[in-house]
Length: 107
Ligand SMILES: [Zn+2]
Ligand SMILES: [Zn+2]
Image (cartoon, rainbow, N blue to C red; front, side, top):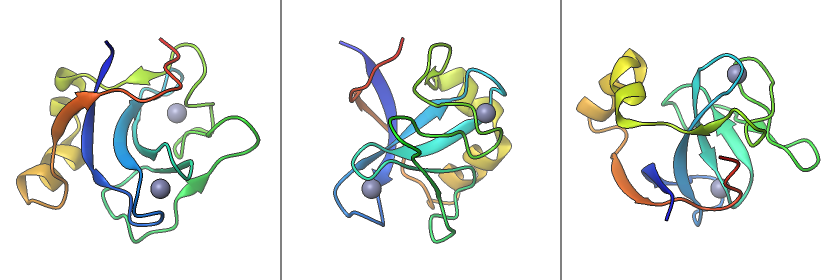
């Protein structure tokens, strides 16, 4: 079973679990919602997110498709290397937990 890190519930649809997706092109980590297909590049979830275009969700940093080959769920080590994520987790703005990854699972 694939696993992913969660950082809470989506403030837009109030249903989706927010996952941390690592972009295969620019290696940025995006916060993504599987239910309403949106992505953020910062912990400010009140900011306007990137929305899906057709079947794919573009990376908020470089616009590469976040569910294409090469992109995957972020690992603990990758999360620890991103100061913006660690700062938000330490401040309690994002609650990090681990659970079952949702589809689509590209890798
Ligand atoms: Zn959502
Ligand atoms: Zn990217």
